[in-house]
Every structure is written in structure tokens, then in C-alpha cells.
Length: 141
Image (cartoon, rainbow, N blue to C red; front, side, top):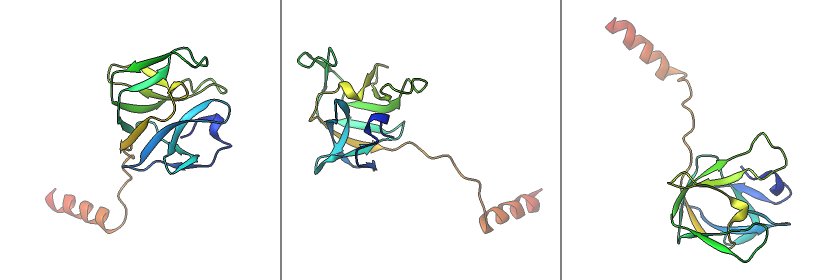
């Protein structure tokens, strides 16, 4: 998903193995882009796991740029927060210590790799495989 404020930006979904770069789009909305196309936002699903090339840096007094703090972790899980508040930023990262940081507060130009996408729910079996399972259960029972 991409934050509501990125809906006017070209976007595509993330894939496992994507190399991403933190980017400030439009009027200060942070997100991810592919390094080869800084004008295209790469949207993540909640639960996507990321690995960063270095410790992450964020602005300590957003939106007043200048003071940076370092996050000592290199892995994070993408989350969406404050979903009940329509016009606020939702895209965030959760770190191993439980800290949650909005994407829009990350310093631009940091590199990440998509490690894993969230699992999709299992669909009910259909067709011949489902019929075989029923027949096997019947034969055993």
C-alpha cells in the first residue's frame, strides 16, 4: 500500500528482492522508490519484511530537517498505523524492539531490500484435488 498522500504519484507493488531507496515525494511525503526510477513510488503490503544496507537515519524533529537520529536496527516490518485517521500518514516501519517510525520521517537516500512479502491466506481447494481428498477420507473411514 502507498500512503494516501502518494496517490498522485506513479506507483507499483513491491516484489521480493526489490532494491528500494527512501525518497521524499511531493510536498514532504516519504516512501520508497526503485533506485532506477525516483519518480515511481514502490508500495508495500503490511507485513512486508525489509533489510537495510546501513543503520537507518530519521529526522528527530520532523518536519524541521537538520537533526538526525540513528535507529540501530537493519531489519524492519512494514506496518500501517492510525488507519482511523483519514488525513494523516499511515506508512510506518516496526523495528525488532517494537519501535514504530513513520516512513515520512526517514532521511532520503537510504537503501533497503525486500526480504519477504506477507503470506496470503490459503484458498479452499477446488477441483480434482479436493475430490481426491474426500474420496481418501471416505475410504479410510
